[in-house]
Image (cartoon, rainbow, N blue to C red; front, side, top):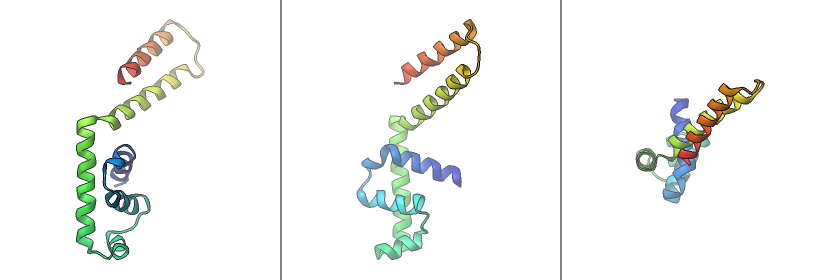
Length: 113
């Protein structure tokens, strides 16, 4: 469950402005403020089912944007590779192998940009 919450929040960070203000608000309340669908429905004077539908529609749209644009996937790859590069360069003696691996990671990062 925590993995799903993290994914939705990350997708919202990247693609949130493409959603309606209402969709953004519902996702914020549900995933970031940890309100239940019933609590959100009470606040919005609507039904729990309407909130559920709005959450599911917004999640679906975010996933569609990611499938088409792939920004989150590229971001995650870049973050992983930068962590690898940082680990590789921290506290090691610089040698030909270290330099070679670092250059390889930097080239991959360059392609992602």
